[in-house]
Image (cartoon, rainbow, N blue to C red; front, side, top):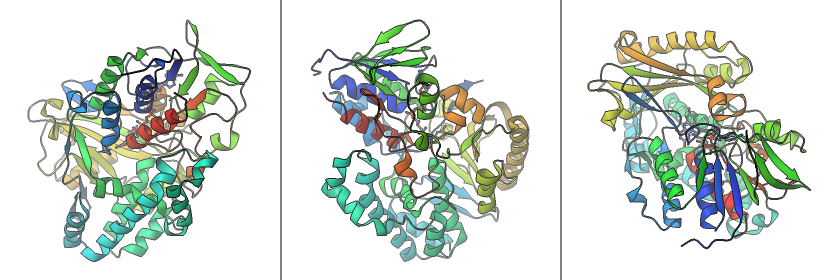
Length: 492
Ligand SMILES: Cc1cc2nc3c(=O)[nH]c(=O)nc-3n(C[C@H](O)[C@H](O)[C@H](O)COP(=O)(O)OP(=O)(O)OC[C@H]3O[C@@H](n4cnc5c(N)ncnc54)[C@H](O)[C@@H]3O)c2cc1C
């Protein structure tokens, strides 16, 4: 039962965090309006349909489903009436050029047993690593994920103080790769654990070893597949929001945030100026300062931080089924350091990129015509600094086709019956993410977490921020937590 408070809240953007914030604010009694530039909701959680194939546009690996369920519980609804998911085991299938195939399982013991059977490291070594990951996760989650990092009073809570006291244990002084090379003798395991740096668009050769907690979410907490694909998260949350009277205005880009006497007072769209008591920006923070309030003081140091990597994706309709592929597949590069040197230093694409192939038709058979598969074929690339993307994408396409054909021992070129392509220019055009960076700021130094924009404005009252470009950072679970932290800072 919602207790109305007669206050109004505007949310700029209907990314997963914006929708979650709308549900949370409505439950606080606010009248909530979500302004979305696109004609559809979801931002990076949207979808594409092409010639009988359906593709999730962006994310594919779904962890921590409880943060979606929480929004239904908060609204007094049964999540299962709107949204459901299945548990994945195995989660990933890793392919190496020497023919090795490794499966990644949920559960420490199962994971360690499977990996130890096919690598040089023992079950004990792998378990020790995963136990450490779990310990670091529990030491850091309250500091970095569950609370604002920018409220002084938070540093005096018991769990955060514990995290700070144990700072030496969380691996802030090694890079991810250094820690993984110390932990494992098998290069394949080092590469598998280094890959988690890409979950927030960073390089394992630069990012602090603290980020080795990322596999905890997948291996220890588990990974899931939302029935109907990732877009079903957007659909069900929008349905929930509408059922509690959140108003969505699509094709309504906000052009300006009105600030009066250092207070956010309303928003200007193409054809209206509307007053609001509270404004929450789910739009990328860099572009929000640049485009929506160009005359307001900017947190220059925060906005100057290097941005994350981006992606090139080929959404391919493939007229064949591959029994050796699962839902999540990785075809590893033979030279990982060189691949990342290209992304971070050359700002280009290495000729042998690691390829991620996500095939949702393995679970949702209607996502592809009978006998076919929908391949979401993605590589990590630098963000947009004016490269010749047409040339880079054409070269990458050739290299991907050759590598996938080699590893799968099948010429895939004649099997591609339709294609859509995403590159960093389209990421920015479609989601307004600065430079087409998918994950906001990169985490390529140990202070990166502290350099993300807070969930509130320090200079403008009633102005708040949520989503992948602000604290606690990118990914679906963190964006849902971002909405939770942001709305917890706003009075009932
Ligand atoms: C290719 C790819 C793969 C990914 N893989 C994963 C994964 O496997 N697992 C995972 O957990 N995460 C993954 N992510 C990251 C995850 O998708 C993002 O961190 C998350 O979806 C970002 O959500 P957000 O709430 O910040 O909003 P966004 O999705 O960035 O959406 C912002 C919305 O705001 C709107 N907007 C912007 N400016 C305005 C304006 N002025 N007026 C009105 N509307 C505006 C935009 O149109 C957009 O709809 C991936 C992302 C991509 C792109």
